Image (cartoon, rainbow over all chains, first blue to last red; front, side, top):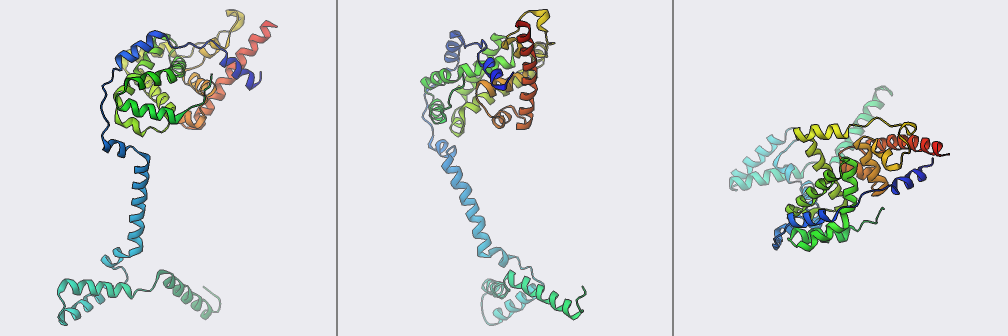
Length: 138
Length: 181
């Protein structure tokens, strides 16, 4: 027996139809009261709203990465904290208010960082030079 | 038996239902009651139980309200609601025990002993999970991925259940054909 024959025999079987009584029961027990939907519900459950929310979240995260704000707040390179403190002190001595001196110092240190790719390139170059100096041995 | 699904129309009806329009419930019933009854019959063999299940689905639908606006595939949603309602019913202890007895796979009755066997009786010999997949796939046109989604199993499990079911049905119906010839 082929699959098509089997499907045909299943479709042709005597499947029951819903009784008229069931329709009456459903309409009676599901008695509804008309109530206008709140605009907040319409927005919350709309596909456009959810998509735009997701897009906005991705946008905010991307902007955060691009702006480098987090890098200013959290210096990570070795010796940066000491440099920030030194610059900050100098700026305060020069008469700048403490908070502005802190911002200036952080910005100056972060801006002087080499881009990530150039750090990678210089590290690779150093390794290559070491390799050459060792006569091709690692 | 399989009808083209009109999700756009169904979504509009669900939105009307969320706003409490009674005509929307009637229209949704007229569009989906027959497939839901067939699905329910695959899960419970008694017609009255099947109709109770479908009744429970529409009652839930009428009381859901605004979340209906978030439904993207109404047909799948309705069948999933029916399946979860059935699972809930099975879990209730007293009714569960009775349903277990009713839905335990019956021993396959050989045609030689029982006379002729038609497709409907052959389907009745299958376990509920296999009957459900057969009905949803062959009669209602759901893919295995959709069936997996609405019954809470992977599409591979759904496909395996279908393969097992059709293997048994083929054996039974071929015996019947041989008996006739």
